Length: 442
Ligand code: SAH
Ligand code: SF4
Image 1 (cartoon, helix red, strand yellow):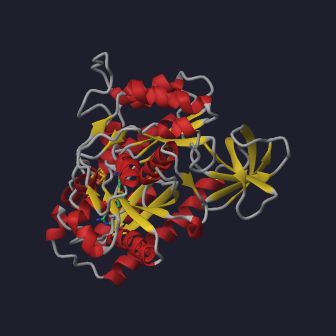
Image 2: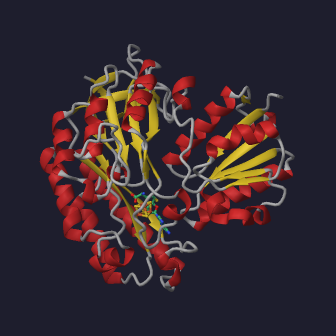
């Protein structure tokens, strides 16, 4: 079979990044060659997102342009599952399309070379998810860090969200496989892993994760097992739901030096009325209680979030509740999204009644609040010493190094010469910005 020069473009979340890495490793294993530049590629795979309409349009537009440029083009990921056979109407002459759980079929499809092909994948359990460990290309941010998908799909069915429709039902990968994959990554130089799942604390809830029939909480046990791997320095995971913030999980945070004190805990809204409409299954008070318990463990515990503005029926009063919740929670960082109705979701049946200009205004207000709050949260760290993993030269200034502390805060300092990527160094913080800390080697 002919070797093909290929390139992958990735849109969307960390899980897509991880899936693209798996496809890359599987294509390389099948004898194909990854190239850096689009003009050198014969095959381009576009990994798509559909969580908001704009995200889908970007990926679909990109695939169309590549076809016009004469490439063999495959679309993978969430938009494929949403569009189904209509994908070939949206993108005429597309060669192949594979859904989020069918990515592992790409090497076979390319090998056979008979187009068009559609594989939506549905609830399929992908093979070769650990192929990235084999090639040693863990590197998402740097070669020393790697994503590891542990929980596929989502069973939460929040009213606005298309993810359960496109990524299928929850499936927890066997814990033994996850541990083996992380061991393999560590042997190849990875020092930090980030475990991925839409609602990752539900790991082991729908299907049994541990072969020995463990009846306790599966995710905290997984964290403890990974904590025992020599050479692994840091463990992160995302995304979380307040219901998963159990005493067991808190005990792991307390006991483990490796489990980072950062939690991405999407809140979506601060209004109980909107939270109920969204089907989030917690109240404002329950959410804030989870944050309070994390910060009781460590006042510098970093909590970050996602918020949606302009959900159907969101009033000015609801929005102000979101603002005040964000202030009470003291988020270290937040990602704000303008509500986008997604076909087939429960909320798509409701009128999208907050005007675009008002969504934009609410978005800007929350971003401005976060700037002030981020500055204030970061200023508390001036004068303290943070443990930072070296990631590489700073993008803005090559004479400086950049890395992250356990709270996922970006830290920048003047290079000393002795540090290597993947080292854990102590940095004394000398100045704070809303999104970055500046320091010097301590
Ligand atoms: N599984 C994650 C979220 C995945 S989607 C979790 O529940 O924590 C990432 C973010 O996109 C969500 O947290 C939400 O803030 C946003 N989002 C999801 N659907 C959306 C929609 N229809 N419109 C606008 N934002 C949306
Ligand atoms: Fe979507 Fe809710 Fe599942 Fe997150 S938990 S992926 S927001 S349905």
